[in-house]
Image 1 (spheres, rainbow, N blue to C red):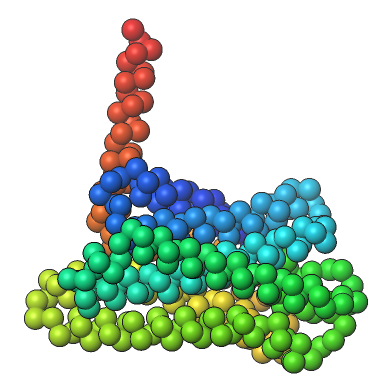
Image 2 (cartoon, one colour):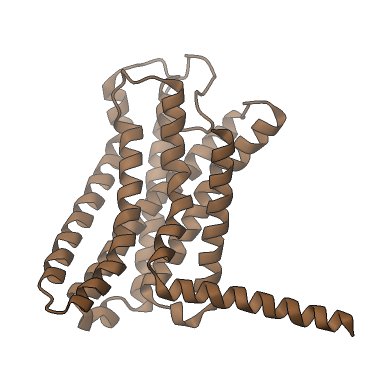
Length: 295
């Protein structure tokens, strides 16, 4: 499991790094959709960088120790980045809704200023959620030992160390997150209901195929993110297998950042074309460098 986790982390770093480079360097990708995709890649890189380096260092040094301050910082950054990513995925569903249902208003509704404001709102909501969750979680007295049964600090495992074991405690900690999660979920569902209605009314099969090809990657990423996170935080308390906890944690913290670049690039001709150009430029530069050396 440790080897698979490290491989997934390296894949996430490589894939999201390629997307960041492609969107930043290719002027053809300077559109709202790719601007949000760039932000998603940044958040995925942040999520991986928050959890895996410490886990890799602990496995190399054969230890599981982390300081109290380090645990607080890790939990805060992880919740911040994951919450911001969920908010950003909600905004990306709005982007797809405008592009397909109101294409004539796309430029006016999603200008550069509006995109920057929406991205800032996603990051801001993640920051607020992280402040509230981290503050509430670590305000609870911890008296059940100091061993976190996980490879990183996460809320369910921290709550197990508190003195109180009531459901009211868990609900108090997760209240704001629940409202944020449900609000974003409802918005995503409504957006895709309108999108599918609009696509099914299209007379051209080519238009339907193009619309679905731009929506399916986002829908796949959203489904992966929501399903893994829901199973991790809403699974019954009777399920207490340590191995299962580890697998679930990897599914929602490591697998989505690793798969997101693959999902978006598989059906995206613009991204694949940009990747090919980057690789060709790299090889051409290497050839020029070698010719210069031979002289």
